[in-house]
Image 1 (cartoon, rainbow, N blue to C red):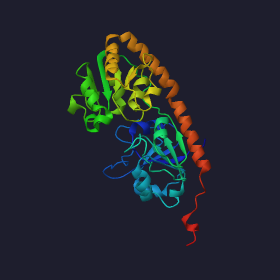
Image 2 (cartoon, one colour):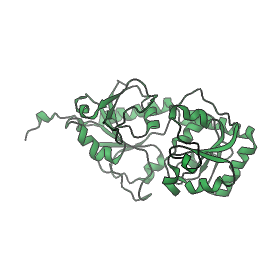
Image 3 (cartoon, rainbow, N blue to C red):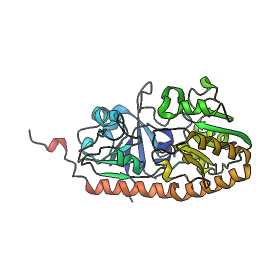
Image 4 (cartoon, rainbow, N blue to C red):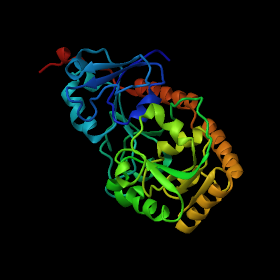
Length: 328
């Protein structure tokens, strides 16, 4: 397809790095002090050079084709603040990263019943559970853009959790499970504020996976979350996975094939101990996990899916009417 001019806010750095592998002209609004969504490329970014920062007040001067919102604030406030009246009529996509809140089945999506928006979910589970109303919805499964040379070694006989602010996020993120399990097996955590709970601290995204690769397995304790990117990243480097059997994960991980998945803590602990005691089997499952990641969560498929969504959004959008042409 032709190269598009796309506005997107910086909400999730790892996802932004992946979606911008689609070769378009991406524009990130920036503001002094870098408030939420306005930090631009971020520190030591690995995003391509065609991802450009633009002062928020200059966005209205861009010749845009598409706008991508990712939060209620983007959708309800930011776009009205920084876009011109003509730009607000452009094809708009709401990229929803999260499972429904506050209620798992009865939460109405902020963009529900908006015919001018295409709502894109990152898992089929999320699309099923959100009340999307009459808004057109699509699913684009995850991918990750990480160093393709990194491979699992598993030499550390210890499991790893990769979650930001695990303690603050509490039971939803599985903090209690992490605390319970590390009493029985060697288990640590990486991510923002993880050092406060005895973990290894925050590691910049460009260096994270080299560290992750050394641990025997990745454990995702999330009870209620979209498919965690940390799981896709670990599978991509060839690492076995242990996960709680909730949301989309039971459709991804198979017991004894890619690692272990269960809603029973006893079974999860047994799976962890098996991987710690059997490094050869851990490597076999990790190899299977990498094969799955390449097949179902690879970047070429991800980019193709997004380009299809962009094409559909452009083809179904009404013609933009200039404010100068409107009669009052």
